[in-house]
Length: 323
View 1: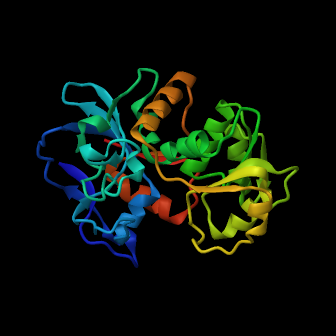
View 2: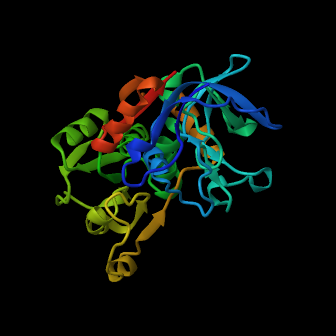
């Protein structure tokens, strides 16, 4: 079958490690089902895989087909979307808190192929209101945004949320979800184009990075790390929450503890989401008619172009590969 994969990682030049070609079709396994992939979305995790980087102690067993997210069809024609987090049967619960959790393309072959093998429980029937194109972006970036907003932030409709960095897949998801849920959505972005996109997607106000705000937010969502951390800390109101998920500008920060104590701030990390949260997200997006922001759709044979877009620029939304 056709696949986009990594044979040998290259930390110095990850795009040189990208391979397109034939790979073996997945062998049947008890409790797993075969999915014919029609749409799959890129994540920065795919670039990390090309570098050989993983967040787990177990190294990636190369050669590895890339891709965490996908929508497609079962052998009987049922349209489905995949939940990307894989755990053993004894670890069902909050999957992201289990020691052995992993996602597609870490130990199991990924989704950038004609077929992917997935645990039966990871296969979610696609609501008729939701297209496979838009469903394909939900598994990683949108699921992470859903958990940040619904599980971690404590926000209620009418309260103010600040999204640091407005253009990535997860940031655009936060904007679209937050606006739909009735929050007052603020964003920051270094670029005028990013601020304009955020406003088009529903943000109420868009500010330059590090700008002074009209007032402090009830919750701040930080996917940037070192470059925005001081601003995030200064931008959250007393009793508020900072939800952090990214370290794209660096993961080491210095911060004063006194404001955290005196202002009774909550600082919490977040990663991915549970299977239950994935079901909630899929149903919410379908029911509310949300159209996730997608900046490019390319055939899987043009995966090299898609990866170059991700590696070389700040994408405004998600990139989807079709098959």
